[in-house]
Image (cartoon, rainbow, N blue to C red; front, top):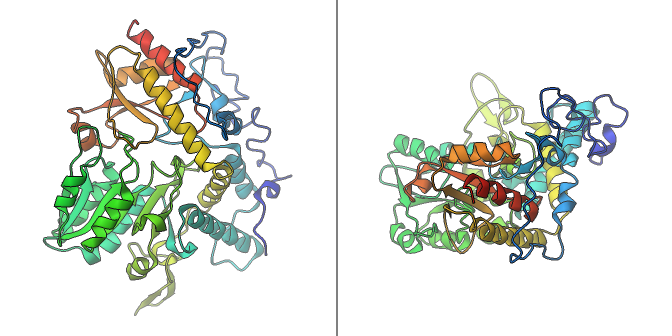
Length: 468
């Protein structure tokens, strides 16, 4: 049986027209600012004109051949709404990405015409849902360059993936005196799980320091590696500094000492191609919602020989072969590590997101984002008192900054009045900020659908805040 086409499953089924005809989707009916909404308590879009300050003439427009952000923007309905009377400028992609209509429609079509549990039903819809779920697993394997779909475990996101590794692999392989090396730039989700399992196993978590530029200090890293090192945990891209460490080289060095390497790919997968076999990563984790997919779905890749040795972290349905009151036998991996009913619709949405995202030239997208980041760096440099954190030579389009005389939360609130969404706070990366003597900062994080015009709006608003 072929995998059902979700674009046709929903036809004629009430409630499955989500996003049909975007722009003009009925998804936002009654929601302030979304198409179809007509709230009385919100100002009309023409009540407060958006900032129209042009980009500095000296700055080149980031338009490398092969990709235009408009090709992506036209598919993303939320980018066509207004916020506080201004067109939305979504610069909080490091927190979550917005969803194309293809993902929204796939979710609606699945629930409207294909909803069923998986792996255990004997009827047609159960078989169809199972095929879609496993097609999603195969798509993730292909996206990451994994050798087999069986190397992919579905989880709620990067946080759950790391906790799974810590509780399953870590509990079995860590002991007193063992070292877990964790880069200082890590998200809390790649620090706290290791602290928890280290306390239980009497191992220790050892931070890898940063250089003043916000790169991982490779000399210090080499010095910290030893026969005691059992695991190295490192982000493929930092959520607060944008730093892209030399993960392949760090992995090769760790393997010389027999250590395993876990790579947090949450911030990386939406910005440049990933090949886990080329990296030689032992574990690689990412979250769907940072890759234009729904929340609550993510994936963990692990080398097959490592997966085979991992024991269940959670018990329940789906991960068993047989159960009685004397013994339980388990299903093979990856199902062994997927207790209970999975986020089936989330996998369907992830599959749709991967199909959409990979329809673009990935190298062209990466080149565009690099050019846009360069443009943004140059434009932000014109704002008096603004300082961008980090200057690592390899980085993604994450621009975390401070503004003299202003609290980061106040900066974010000011920008929000102009319809510009950024994040402010510690970004779940307090050690990275502490490296710069900070407790909080504002962050603008870019994606393939952002434009130089949106950067101009950000800069103009910040300049007005500074009275420039």
